Structures are given as structure tokens and as C-alpha cells.
Image 1 (cartoon, rainbow, N blue to C red):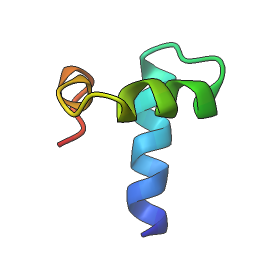
Image 2 (image 1 turned 90 degrees about the vertical axis):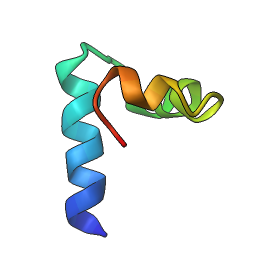
Image 3 (image 1 turned 180 degrees about the vertical axis):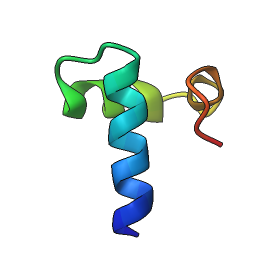
Image 4 (image 1 turned 135 degrees about the vertical axis):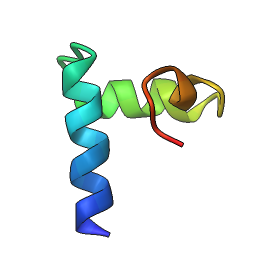
Length: 40
């Protein structure tokens, strides 16, 4: 689970997210947004 979490955090950082919590909330509102940054 930690590996998956770190992968998600790394993907968010690559997209330029400054606030990881806010970015995660934004993505979690719509399942198709995760596809845009490569998290499936």
C-alpha cells in the first residue's frame, strides 16, 4: 500500500501540484481525472 501511495504522490508532483491534499481531493471527485495523469 505504501508503494501505491508513493506512486500516486509522485504522479501528483510530476503534474506540478503544490498542495497534495487539495490535488487528491480534486482528482477523487471524478474518476476520469485520474486517467489524465496516468493513475488507473
